[in-house]
Each structure stands twice: as structure tokens, then as C-alpha cells.
Length: 352
Image 1 (cartoon, rainbow, N blue to C red):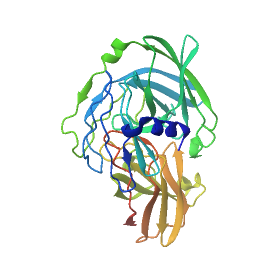
Image 2 (cartoon, rainbow, N blue to C red):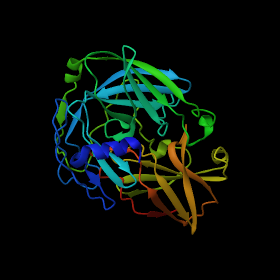
Image 3 (cartoon, rainbow, N blue to C red):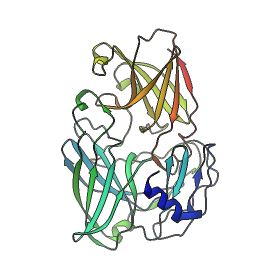
Image 4 (cartoon, rainbow, N blue to C red):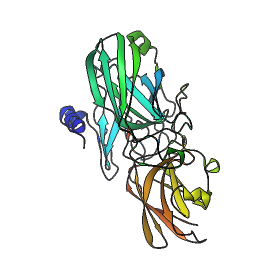
């Protein structure tokens, strides 16, 4: 657990809800209510994706490039989310001092592929003086999908400079991505913050909150959502679809020239997404058992397959039994509606 996590757990005491390995969520108390604080979380939500209690508007601050990376900076009203460490979730409530929920998305401008696992740090300055600097959370929301974000307290209206840094993409990169995204990158985006502008980001209750389902994604001009491509739009042969922990797993195989870029004669790829909105689920540990042989799937980003889990295998014979085992659930924080899903993920099988 990061030092920041330890400090927050010690400081929040009873305001922290815990999602245990059995999937039981201690919802905790409502906590202090500031002007931008969301309503209390739902009691006894389903252990699956569900419609959250409320949504708020999102404002695009700006877009900037450094090297192959494109950054988008956005903000919304302060938000509650759950940090996941292993299979345990820690509830993070906004404080009365928090001004905004600051968010950043990083992507490849050529393909539009959103890039998880780049390790993003946010530094906020005002008149040259440091206001705050944080290694922000990788997180998932129903409206934006994968992004980086956290709640921030700003000392008042005015002009700020937000510096976004990434450490580079340290997972496997293939195809046209093979020689890109390895190096750190930094951009600065000006933020003109006015409390009146924040007040215009209305927080709205959601119809049928707590029911299975999801709110619609919120398209932001010039910033892509991290939506996994449909199986019909992906290269290779679609071998089937299975579900576990409410996650949707599409299994594909590539052969010949299509597999060669993965240094394989036959390449097995698994694309994992949320139900309803099809958002990419990154940062999992995934293992495949095929005809009794076990293989660890590698987290990979490819311009055609997008973010996926893959491994070279022997030729896939018809009728072979394939079992997917989740060794680690997606290690991303979750906004309301996702916090109880994608935690307990039993093995699933299909016949090729």
C-alpha cells in the first residue's frame, strides 16, 4: 500500500469503508457534508455493476501534448470513490475543504487508445507557489471509464497551473506502440478556477439508483473514453465470451502474420471490459489453463487490440478446454456503481 494510502487510513478512522475478500462492504457513515459533498452511499448495493445514486457534470480544462502522449485535464464536483488494494476496498470521502475532483486521461492521439498504467502525478501551483502535489489514483467511472483522479482543495478563485507528469508506460507495448511511450512526459495546463463555474456542474440524482445497470458514458469533446472495441472490430478470431465478477472477457486468437508482432505463431488475447458501457478493465492478474498447461497472460497495449492480456500458445485445436483464472482483480479505484464489482472473480471456462 502506498504511503499516501496509509496516511489516509490512519486519518479517516470510521469514515473509511472496507470491502473485504468476501465481497462485503462496510458502507460507513456519511461523513461531514461540504457544499460539493455527494449524498451518502447507497445501503446494501448489489455485488455487481449498479446505477449510482447521482452524477455530476464534467468540465474540460484543456488538452496538451508531450512526445507521443496526449493529456486531457478535466474536473467535476468532489466525488466519493473506493481505492482497491488486493481485494480490499477503502472508501475515500471528499472533505468539506475539497473544491473539485480533478481528472486526467492520457492517450495515443493517432489511434485514440487510452493508456492505463502510466503512473500519473499532479502538481498544482498558484503564482509560482506549490499548492499541492499528489500521485493520483488510477480509477474507473461509468461516465468516463479509466482515468486518473482525486479530490483537491484549492485556496480560492483564480488562475492555477496544473502540471501533469507520467513515468512512461512500463507494460508490454506491441505493433506500432513497441518503441513508443517508454519515456516520462510532462505537460502544464492552465486552470482558471471560479466557485461560480463549479456551481454550474449540477449534481443530479439517478433514476433507479441501486438497480443493475450503468449510467450512459459522458462524451467530452477532444477526450476519448476508454471503451474496449467490440469483438467484431478486433483482429483475429473471436473464440467466445465469458463473465466473472460481472466483468466481460472476450477471448481471441491470432495466427500467422497477425501473431508475428507478438513473437508468436498463435497468440491468445483476452480483452476485459465492464458490462453495459464496455469500459476497459486494466491492471489485472490473469492466468490461462489450456489443455492442462498454464500460462500467465501479459498486460499489453497494442494499437489494434488496445489494452488486453495476451500470451503465445501452441496451435488451438477445436474442442480444447480453456480456463481463465483471475489472480488479482483490477487494481484501480472505483467510483460509485463499480465498487462492489470486479473483486470476487471465480475461474471461468469455455470450449474452443
